[in-house]
Length: 266
Image (tube, rainbow, N blue to C red; front, side, top):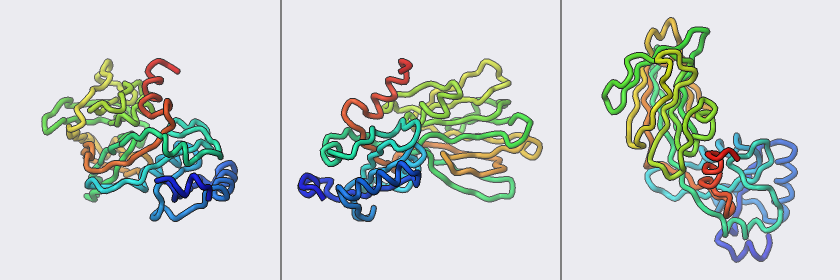
């Protein structure tokens, strides 16, 4: 372990690898330089991989009810790496010390299936409802107990956090939200009726209820990031302000800055 690490508030680092060749090579090199402690004992978690690994890591280290959340710092050993920092072996402790922190609150999804089961999951990026067959889904939308759309015919619908607004939401032509916006994006996926509906911006304290119409004929699945529940008939979504995760980025490359850049196309 380097002398800088021994004097830092980030003296104990846990490294996580995606398992790819590049990530495993990075894991070996960084462990030799800084050591590698169990995640439960670490001051910070360093994820080596792409955005997929970063999402898995964020899910693994969420903390509820205001309890301390270990900061997570990603270094890109994957492809896109929107959530990651540039990979560099030297100066890691100094980079951790100088990093800018962003706190992300997830969505919580409560889904009821056709066979009467209820399941709950959280999403850093988005909750998506997706048609399971060749037929478009029919959905009824309510916000805070008030019906807002009696019938949406579409391939699906998603609710995105500000952090997730540049992911699937953007691909579905949804709006990019600043990270500190107290909003959620409600975005249709290939809407057929109403044909010109482009979605809505909702307060992040809103509770969204989606009911699946003609569920047997037009089955729908619900997905919270990577967790899928099939044959849902009712899904409730709201932001979980009691649960959070801290993500670290190098100065000038914070998540806020990256989202802002996306709005200007670079």
